[in-house]
Amino acid sequence: MEQATVSGTEPDAADSGEAIRLESVTKRFGEFTAVDAIDLSIPRGEFFSLLGPSGCGKTTTLRMLAGFEIPTEGRILLEGDPVEDVPPYRRNVNMVFQSYALFGHLDVADNVAFGLKRRKVPKDEISRRVDEALELVSLGSRAKSRPSELSGGQRQRVALARALVNRPAVLLLDEPLGALDLKLRRQMQVELKQIQREVGITFVYVTHDQEEALSMSDRVAVMSEGRIAQCGPPEEVYEHPTEEFVAGFIGISNMIEGVVDAPGSVKIGTGMRIPAPIPGDCDPGDTVQLSVRPEKIAVDDEIESGMVEMTGTVVSRIYHGVNTQITVELGQGAHLVALEQATYTASADDRWEEGMKVRLGWHPENCLVLR
Image 1: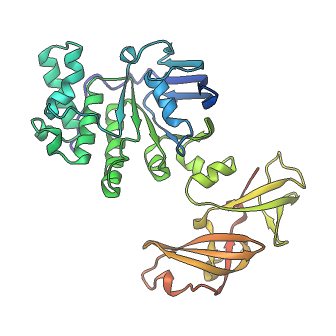
Image 2: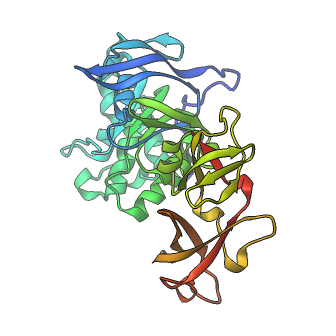
């Protein structure tokens, strides 16, 4: 994609303040609490994602930032200024929707220029800024096209250019890639992140797609039932979830219930004691969940010295191309899922059959203990 910049969007390098701060923000609809006293700080220039299942409160949070919803309690600050009572059109933010919301009777350039014209920006400046924005999203050659003549990905780029041309302090994106097919969606993920880096604007991105959030974001806030379950860099959220919900929602994670048996071990239903790092707030007798990612599990001849070993029976096998997912029954209702990477010599489908016995293993440090 061609390199371009939107003049005036890069923040001063010496200015390292917050773009957004939420202080005990709550939103109720009647007796239903959609957002429950969340605290959040987002620095300027960050690509920040709100991730979670439907109904978790992520879109309501975004709409409160935009001014479309008013908090029931708490404060919202944009660049240090409280905005709970400031109407949407007076906030220095713009929002990009999944539906694009383009004007079909206007060409691409006029769609992008719409907000500038309403603000009575001089014509020469409008022309320059529209050209810059369209070059930024690689649509300079389609300025005179109508939205009906564009693909879904191109229409989404127009919506993005229309938001960026106003030079907002914060760009809010509500599942903007949800209507695109998988291949185009992944392409747009790369382009969105590149654009964000070029312009330096704070992006707040709402999605239910874990892979999307992990691949694009500087930080991710995982939401559940109106609260922030965990917030941190993608690697931290994935590798070190702090609770069972996060481990189960982000990717695939094996969960085995057990009881803290002694310092450094958990006893599971099969009677086996599993060595694992026990959190300081866990006492012997506490019920916990053991969490192991499928890609951390070795199978048969891949097992190394020092690994925890278990034996079970293959009950299912799913071929994914780059890997094969096998589910192994351990007994007493416990199952583990492992991912066997494809090799040049053989497909994992040739190695595993339902009903066969296999050994599984993992390093103790790859097993998390969650309350």
